[in-house]
Length: 434
Image (cartoon, rainbow, N blue to C red):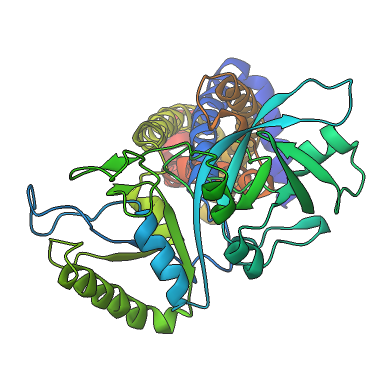
């Protein structure tokens, strides 16, 4: 019976080509616009480290002076070097990592390559197991390298391919900003989006090519990139990177069992109280401990214009469906005579309803296929935009399934009212009018 209804739908399409085309285009435009914006939103709002995001916490303290204090305001988003190193020594979490971004100059051994600049990350050994960073060759540096300011480095796959032609470079030396560092590991391709571990620099940027111990970067005076907020009278010798400099410029992450998060929060309060008693902190204890998704939400990793575009596109889809409902009503009611004859010959209301729903579903399938094509064109257009997340706009498998589901739902929802009206046709009145 279903196949019979499909054949009737195809015949109906042939008899009303213009009306059918209008309905297909209306659904296609709505699906295309909705899937374009929903795909971008899906990419930007997804969990960048699924299965572990509830165990990773971003730490905030407030070391600012008393002046300008407003009760209830958010603490500093980053941390001073003094506090970060003190908490690293305390080791109150299962794992902990301090980090900042930077830049470096690579001088290759090969005479065919000229020196070039790369992005770098200065961090501590726990960074790699905390964030499940995959290795192609070698391993991370050790805690001993952190403490001893070891002259070691981990390379990205891209840099290893460029400098060492993709070979296992573990144990070889690389000149980084004028310093010879020993390669201890090479990463596989790794680029979580957004780059949740450092939203102060670039939320959707490229992976860093050079990673070295934070302590080594301080010892070699490598400098850093990203935001820095200094307050008070500045450091004694004018360097913002000094141990006692009143400047926040570091990110600090910990890995905890969620059940122990409250204990760590209390530790942060106690630490703040100790620093206030020592004269470093002046404000009442103001601390935060945020999971990955909470931190992304606080930092508004999904741009507000993307959220607005989603609502506008869904509103446009509703308008398209309303237009489709009107066109289906016109189409079905124009066939009242045909429906009356079928009812007189024994067709039940349910059969008439099912026939009309199948016809509406067929229109939706055609519109959905065209809509997916329009979404692919729309996503291509997004990738041409000068925004840092543009390259991420691709339709993956889950969004393709959503597109198909949204198409079927939209077409069936649009067909319900016209089908219900069509099955209410009274056979006697229609036969009498004939």
